[in-house]
Length: 120
Image 1 (spheres, rainbow, N blue to C red):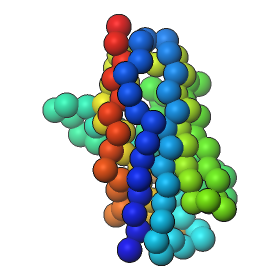
Image 2 (cartoon, rainbow, N blue to C red; image 1 turned 90 degrees about the vertical axis):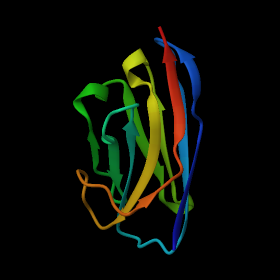
Image 3 (tube, rainbow, N blue to C red; image 1 turned 180 degrees about the vertical axis):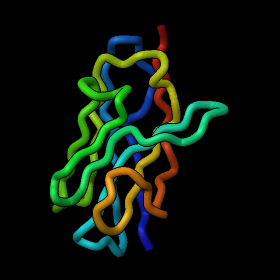
Image 4 (cartoon, rainbow, N blue to C red; image 1 turned 135 degrees about the vertical axis):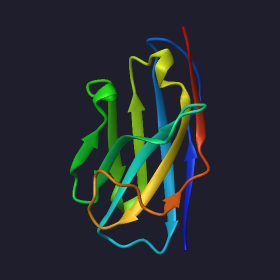
């Protein structure tokens, strides 16, 4: 069983920054991919950024240059530094984990989500 717990969401003005954190616990294979997805009201859940345990990263085009994903493998933590936030970044952000290397598809494990709201 794997558990993911996110933290760090909130309300911020456009142009501001937030840092999301996700702690993973349970039976986690050493080779894995962790990432962040977001879901706005009425929309599908979409990939934001992913990172393999080996350090490869992937980003949605809409966040390249503004968001940075990082990991602490020893602590099973993944982070998302979000800078230059825009109102269109407003969504619930979910942490995801999958076994193995795959930057483009989510695995079966999801956190509960954390709300990010960017005001104009």
